[in-house]
Length: 144
Image (cartoon, rainbow, N blue to C red; front, side, top):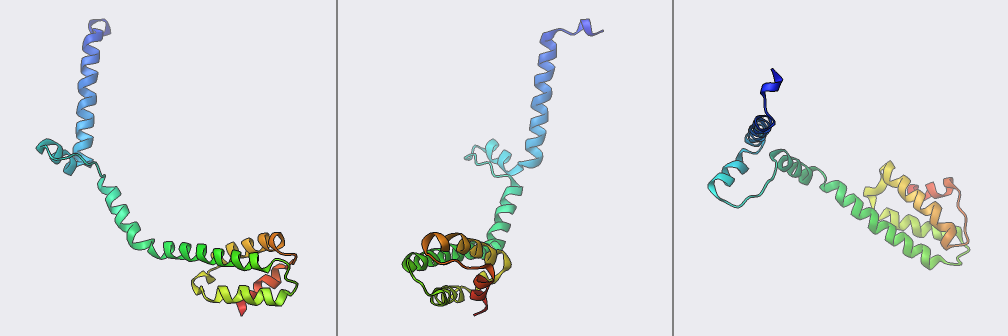
């Protein structure tokens, strides 16, 4: 029975089947784009699910983006303080300056941001100054 089917007819049937399959998929998932393609308008494929996702992200992630920007600004300020601290020998003075910077950014009091800032400080204070802080000392800057 299979000997009766030629390679030519097999590939022709395969091409028609694949074409029909993709036309059905395009018709189901991209109806607006298909209509604009048929009418001759400019072709811009934007999956409808992608548009909804973009709209949702624009509404919900605005707060997160602002907090990340605030975190970058805070880290830049902390880096400036640590750069100016240099050979400072007074731990309390440095802690006061760090606390003042962090009090200007109350949005960063979430545990995730506190850990990130704490890691940044514990890594960079010994590099940029001659002071060493314990973790409990760095936690005090959030309390003030």
